[in-house]
Length: 247
Ligand SMILES: [Zn+2]
Image (cartoon, rainbow, N blue to C red; front, side, top):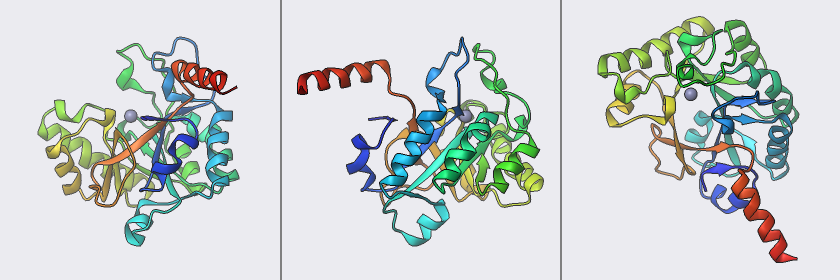
């Protein structure tokens, strides 16, 4: 199962390792959006967090998990791209559950929009500028690098990929005065060469878009995640059929 909607289907697998959830945009979805699954409504977000909280999950940083070696009932919450909506709609539900989240920022696009998918016709949404990132940090959350310009790193040539990986780390560290230890591959696009570059830049771990739970022994430079979203129409249909069959 590749998408996360609610805890039930994942109870067993979450026991086997460290789950990492991926979010992008929160709140109302504008008309004409191409990739609808990247929006999670505020109510659903709050519901997903409170369900995890009620089940005894606490958020953790990767550093804690790596040093403790025990991921029981821990979860990592990540946001990709640095959308303003994550700050606007996310802070309250995160605080209500004493949860901390990681925001992967596109270092060359702070205060701009999701320019990388503009040519594909995607609706443009505001990205946090430095001031808003400071608010995110002040609320107890963390940041990582999601490159400089959000390219497909395996397609742009080694020198440019290296620059995307190194310069984004440096820019974010200079701007926010803290270590940037984690990287997130744009589009989940990576290979061995790219992960070596990430390692060489001094990151401690990197996140992919490969669906799954991180079991012991998982390479820290190929961490799996589950994208959180509303149930797809086909999934809803399956559930309602199951309910009908059960009654
Ligand atoms: Zn992204």
